[in-house]
Image (cartoon, rainbow, N blue to C red):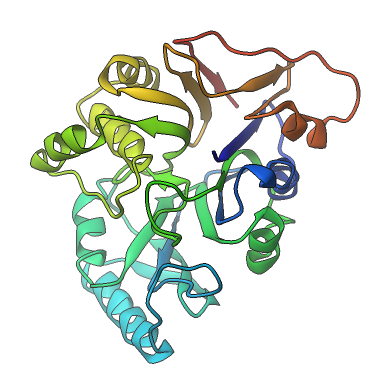
Length: 314
C-alpha cells in the first residue's frame, strides 16, 4: 500500500526533519517495513554531501544476510581510498551506524557519473544520495524509529519528501526503500506509491543506455527514468510529463531537486493524493491525516486531477 508525503517552504526554512517525521508517522498504517527521508538543506553548500551504505540492516523483518562488522570496515577503507584516488577531499566523515556513512567532500567536478560508478564498483556499497543540499536517509522501521536512529528531528531545510513502505514487490532492505536518488544527478530524489507494469521493459532499455539499478523495486525506475530524460536535456517538468505516457501502471510520485518539488499522478488516478497550498507552504500526502499532523487548524485541501503534473519552487 505505502504512503508518501512531501512539503516545501517558499521563502523560508523550517525544521523539515521534524515536520516530515510527523507526516510519515501519521501514515505508518500504510507501511512500517521501512521509512525514508529526502531532506534539502536551507542553503546549498560548496561541498558535496554523500550518504553511503556499506551493508544492510539485518534487524527484525530484514530479508538481508548478516555480515560481520569487519566487512563494513574494509568497505569503508576502500571507499575512502577511492575518494582520494579521484581527487575528492574528505572535509568531514561521520559513521552514523556500522553500515551507514556520511561524508562531506570537496570535489571540483559536476559530472558525477564516473565518480559514482567508481564508488559503487565496490561490492556491497551503494551511494544513497549525492548533492550539495540533498541527504537521503532510509532504513527499516517506522518514521519515528528512523528519525530517532539518525537524529533527524533538528534538521533545518526548505523542502523534503518521504516514504512509508509496505514491501510487496521486493525485499525488506535498505536498497529497496525509498527515496531513490536520481543517479547520477546531484540533488534529485523520488518517492512513489503505486505499481509499474512495464518495469522490466523500461529497465532493459535504460540499462542498455548505461543507467544503473541497485534494486528490483519498481519505484527505482522512476528516478532512473527521470535522470535519463534530464541527462538528455529535458527539464524536470518535461521529464515528469513524459513519464505519464512512458510509464504504465498506477502511480503517484513526488520528485525533488535542490530548489523544486514536483508531483505527478497517472491518468487513471487510482493512487490517492491530498494537497494543501498557500503562498508560503505546499504540503501533500497519501492521506489528509499527514497534512493535519503539520497543520491541525481548519484548512482547505484538494485532490489533484488525473494525469496532472505540478512543480513548485522554493
